[in-house]
Image 1 (tube, helix red, strand yellow):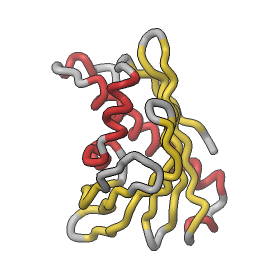
Image 2 (cartoon, rainbow, N blue to C red):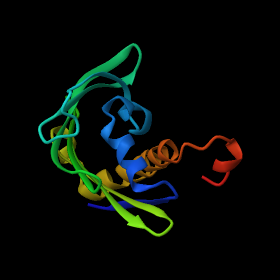
Image 3 (cartoon, rainbow, N blue to C red):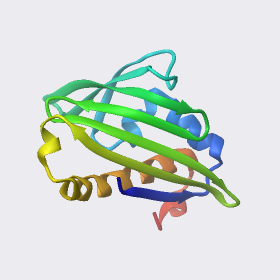
Length: 152
């Protein structure tokens, strides 16, 4: 899987807080249009976010499941978008002197999309993940002025 990364000035705890808030998922995950329910144990292993994908009035209702969680460091997910397929997503945080390096890896090896050659799948996923990390960083940084984000 190709790794997409983004450096943020936010504290690691701030980035993790956004990731651990299941209700914020649709605000930073590109493609998720709304959250319908978040299990109380999110982001513990096995916990689910019930979300919708698409634009009204054409919405697919599905879920994302936590496969592995190392709080403050790693979140591994299985994101379902049936009938299109299922994605395996990994988001890893690395504390740096000037904030946090966020790394994201994803592939969609399940469902009909698996028949798309992997290089083409990755070419489609990479820009989406770059925007996802941009949104995650913006939420974690909590800037109060548009000038603060002019270069993002």
